[in-house]
Image (cartoon, rainbow, N blue to C red; front, side, top):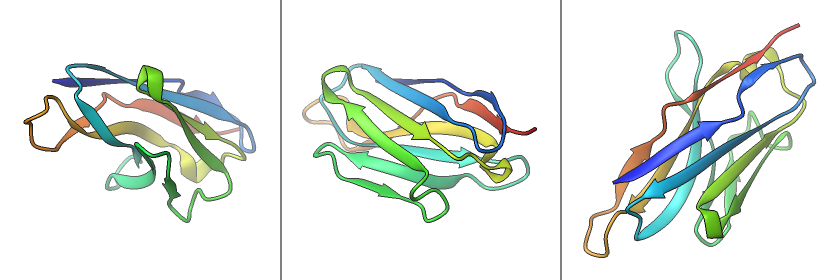
Length: 121
């Protein structure tokens, strides 16, 4: 099984920055992509950004230009650098990986436990 652990959430003022981290461990044959989603109170979980195993990134329009996703492939770790944070960015942020645990495994989705980001003055 692939385990994901997020860290780096917290309380920040509008306009501030935070860096989230997600590290994958366990039985990992290959990670195809690592992704971030967020879920605000009372709302559906929504896509934020992803990075593929080749390093290609994509962002939701709501965060484009403010969030940057990078990875340390050697450690199966990704970083989500969030700048110019807005109150509407407040949510629980979840790391997701599309990965194969073994060479003959099907591609599967794995989720972390989430980390709270609160943007408030």
